[in-house]
Structures are given as C-alpha cells and as structure tokens.
Length: 289
Image (cartoon, rainbow, N blue to C red; front, side, top):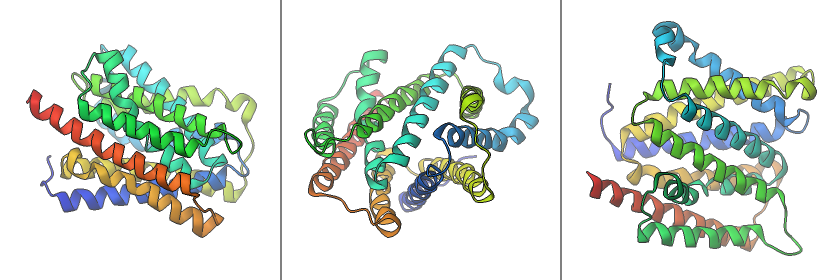
C-alpha cells in the first residue's frame, strides 16, 4: 500500500530516523566500552533477523527463491563489512565525527556506479565529489593530529556505497523484502563466526544495551523507509544529514565532545556535497523518465 505524498511528513520521518540513528550510535559507543565489536555486530544482526521471522513465516520459502544469489552475497558481505567498520569507529571516535564520516556515503555512490554499472557521472555529481573530498581532507587532518581510525570510517562509507549500488541493481528484479531478508541471513551467518574467539558473557546492563541496539536499528529502518515512501529522496534526503548535528549535540551532552574548526568546516563541505549529489540524482532520474 502506498503512502500519501507529503514533504513535511517525509522530512519528519527522516529527522526521527536520524535522531534514532544517533541514539543507536551512542548506545553502540557505550556498549563498546565493555564488549568486543564482534559481539555488538552479531547481536544487531541477530535481532534484525528475528524481527523479520514473521514475514518469513507468512511468505514461506518462496520469499527466498532467487536467481541473483551472487548479488545478495555481494550486498551481504559488503554490508556487514561496513557495519563492523562503522561500529569500530563509533567506539573509537567522537560521535559527531563518526556520523560525519558516515555521511560521506553519497560521495562514493557515483564513483561505484560509474565503475560497476557504467553510469555517467553528471557535472553536478563531479562537483559534489570534489566538494565532499575537500571536506574529508579537512576532518582527516593529515599531519600531527591525524587519527587512522578516521580512515576506517572512510572505508566503511566506501564499502557501504558498494552495498547500496548492489541494492539498486537488485531492485530491478528483487522485491525489497527479499533483499532485506537475505542481508539479515547473510550478515547473521558471517557475524556468528568471530564469536568463536570474541565471546564475552554480557552483564545485565550490557544485555540491555545489546537489545537496545537491535530495537533502535529496526526503528531506524522503519522510519527511513516510511520517510522515503512519503516524499522523493531528492526533496527530503538532505534531512539525513541532521545526524551530524544530533551527533554533535549528543556527544557534547554525554561525553563533553567539542568540534574543532576543521571538523566544523568539513561538515559544511560534506553536507553541501550531499545536497549536490541528491540534486544530481534527481536530474538524472528526470532525464531517464
């Protein structure tokens, strides 16, 4: 069933999704103090898979019948790799900087789409890439203050962009629920392996944090889906950058984290690049319609 189109409603859902994403990032940051990254990733995937079981029970095995298993594998492996990297970054960087690095994903998508799908990169998208990487350079701060963890965050965004381009390729033949279900299955199977050497029995508080990560992750997916169903991405996508602001506020309130000038200017550059990338995508869609 389609949703009534409304830019205001779409913007509210996207803002709510980004706030929940920031809260989830803060919970992951807290959980990282006492639990290995491998456990946090596994339980996030496990709870995600469990939340989809009612759909699997209703649809039966027909929902997983596919001729695109290789693409589902690419999507799953890239997605879980990006997740490991992002969760590591959340545990080792300022929350706002982690959110900022995650916001670079739209900068990488045109490059991946060009190299894999041979999609032309419009002039506006090229400008977005240039502006975005200027912002990245500013927040990386090469030199004495360089933090290699930021490179992990950048890698996370690059790998996540491959996952998103794969979703675009899958969407031509695969229903969204099948793509989501395959990701949950593959990510859970992949992330269970490291538990053989990384298991640590959680305390009651840590169990609550792990459960919260699962709940928040599911809510982020639901709110984001509803947001983009309510209005075109080109009109409400810019609100996805609110997680950078939310990250700065939550980081300041709970960890007394403050941005330096480089990070602030870099955030402006990356947000501008994201806006340009969205506008570029809108024009590309309009030409192809």
